[in-house]
Length: 164
Image (tube, rainbow, N blue to C red):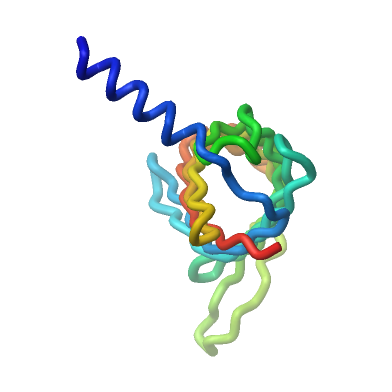
């Protein structure tokens, strides 16, 4: 019992340290589909903090013959200026583009394969203010407007460096 109390007190102490005091962050983004066809994508992202609880995040990601561009609104449950650890909820939109490669090796847009989707996510993040880095991961569900289906099976991970 005493160990459990000490462990909980230690975690609360770690999570209550003062966090970042800068608005812009840039980093790497990975998105993994955990069920069905393996559609893993990687890319770059930027984040701008609107206030101590909300932020905007944009990302460009892709893989062979695919590029996605998205923007998310994220709401952090804890004050980012007072806590390094945070839990966030988000909603966003993205546009997805597919290309086909013919025998000549030239990428050609497939008009029927491009689609718009909406996404919701729930995640956690942790900031390391001394080195201006933050790590995050989230569970994401997407709604494909073209196929009219929900795909609740994406995991995202990322690392972000905070500049200003």
